[in-house]
Length: 313
Image: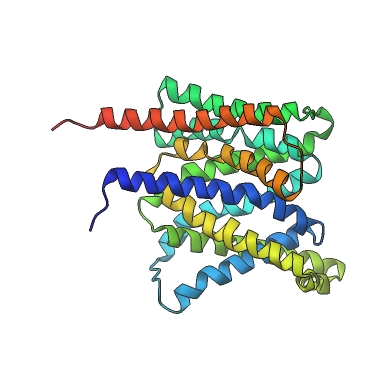
């Protein structure tokens, strides 16, 4: 039985919200892992476990993946954008900068997506969509600026890497959009995770081998808190979130999907207050209202435009 377009789009929005929640909380677990292991090792373990888990239903035949070499060549560039370049730039960018700067720069993702989608996908956005999108971005920037940490020119390298990471994130959403029309979410997820697992594990092994510390590659796996954090990052934040993003992009435009990334910032702040007991001030609520208004406004404006574009019977 076919689902109605309204129900399908509703499920796509739900997938986007759950995706934002998982990504928002992932920063807490990422902080725990980098205190125990080298960032490259964290990424290697994270994507190795993700690929292992996602391959179980494939190996047992519960899910069939039929891809030719030509299909793989189409999907591999997606995996190079995210997870490889996106996480690599983000991880090393955070070494030279702080989380506030990262949050401000990451908030620019919808802007980059809007530009790239209009250029490469010819997606048209209304003036109202652009205004609501900027309102959501303004909410994130307002929260981080009010935290008292301004952008610094002294860590240009970190800022440049974070900017590249954000562009890769926007590029992923744009490149994934046409691929989701041809391939199943599981197929895209499986290939991109394989790309990440191969690149990060090979890099990690080469790094350890060159300095004679190969035993340090598996040493962190003996820490229970590290394993728990890696499990969250690998299964929920990497594998499951990729499935959710692929599904949402099947039914939503790239510019609509990207604005949900700003919800991740809001959820990250809420998680910090709940788990790390970080103080929540009035500006958090003001920023939250701006973010939510921007998310709802962008998507409702886009939905109205889609309905008006449909031919009447």
